Image (cartoon, rainbow over all chains, first blue to last red):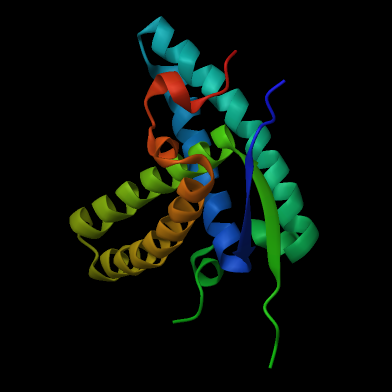
Length: 84
Length: 84
């Protein structure tokens, strides 16, 4: 059996939020592709990719909420980025 | 002084690659907005957001390469997702 390697990354509040927002936008993109592309294979691929990514996003979101609270999913412009 | 809280997340190879690809697409989107939007404020916001996100992506990519090697940035369809 081959042990799967993993990386451990430490993320601040705004970094976790950026990643969550990026994952959400990628999910929207994949859903749009799966629903609108004429090529059946491409649509199926996008649909499968969507299902993989949605699981990752759910786990990431759950872990982020445990640390930062529910506000971590607030993507409104005023709160996403660090104060400049 | 307020200590900044952070989260520690453990990611497998394909999960790190998905996040990297999602961050790359979000960067492309922000660059397109900053270059093409007529509203000057919106273009400036997108440009600033781009600069914040590019730093996060560079750190994440560097840490991912240290664990998984350079192949982690290969986003070709055959290798991104786990074998189904």
